[in-house]
Amino acid sequence: MNGHLFVIDGDLTRIACDAWLIPTDDQFVIEDPWRGCLKPHEREMLANRDGWLPGESAFPLNADPVSGEPWIWLGRIGTNEPQPGWYGERGAKFVELAAKAVREARLVNRAEPLD
Image 1 (spheres, helix red, strand yellow):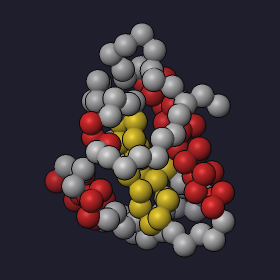
Image 2: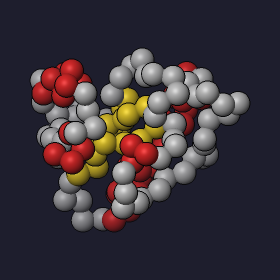
Image 3: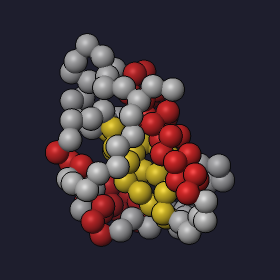
């Protein structure tokens, strides 16, 4: 699998990337620090969502992302899972899905995506 997953203490909105993940919990709650990354209409759209569908772990916030901007995805990451490997699996699944979607959409303003 191609792609990279970085865990940092910083402002994700300032990193050059093709996509980034906003974590949610099992009930689809997005915490305040992440909610500020969403536009008002995106917050409204998500307010009506009850939770994750069975087997769902990550999906793009917008079906039609803006070329040249990172594609925001939502991920089912926040939980009380006792096994640390579970979090790594979720991160890897996001990278797999997002890298494939970015390649297929050809969203980036460079010869190749950053994967």
